[in-house]
Every structure is written in C-alpha cells, then in structure tokens.
Length: 131
Image (cartoon, rainbow, N blue to C red; front, side, top):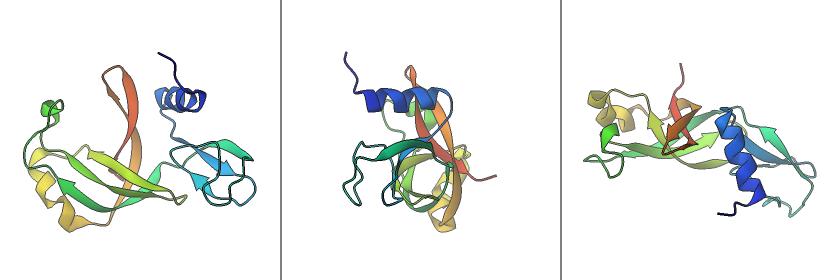
C-alpha cells in the first residue's frame, strides 16, 4: 500500500509521541492535520512544527453503548478540541473512569492534552483531561 509522504511523516511522528502540524511561514497560520498548502493564504511556504498538544474541548458527546470495534473502551467520549495554536478538530477523550463519562458534558469547557494512543498497529491522537 502506498502512503502519501505527508501522511507517512505525520504517523512516524505519532510513533514518537509527537503531534505535528504545519506552520505557514508567509502568514503564521497553523494547519492541523498537516497539509502542504496553507488554507489561510494559499502559500506553499509551510514547515513541519511540533504542536504543543494542549487545547480546550468545547463540546462533546458520550456514546450510549460501547461501539464496535472499541467495545473494550466502554462508552466513548468524542468532542471538539481547539488546539492552543488555533486548529480545531474532533477527537476522543480518554483516561476517564466509566462512571465519570456521562458527567463530562457538564464540565465543559475542559483543558486537555494530547496523548498518542496505540490501536491496531498504529498510533493516533486522542486527548486526556490536563493534569
């Protein structure tokens, strides 16, 4: 299977527990997930940067029942995370006791931090409540 170079580099960084994005050297806009062209100004003068990994979860939902193929994780908490650098996306919130999950929406906004989660042979970005 052929993998796009930008995707390959991003996953390689996750294996080292680094959350990478792109910084536009023309306008200073951060892109995450990384893309080769700035969505703000259209410049191709972008560079890889390690993101801080800190952000705020501003909304979320809690699954009513465990979802295949993640039954071992119990109810899933997925939410909208705004990174400190500006980009925002949807990710999972992990590291929460099962009996605490339903109360998470009432605690928003939550300060969160990135962790690289190992699953099915690769790592992907998820978040935990900031310690």
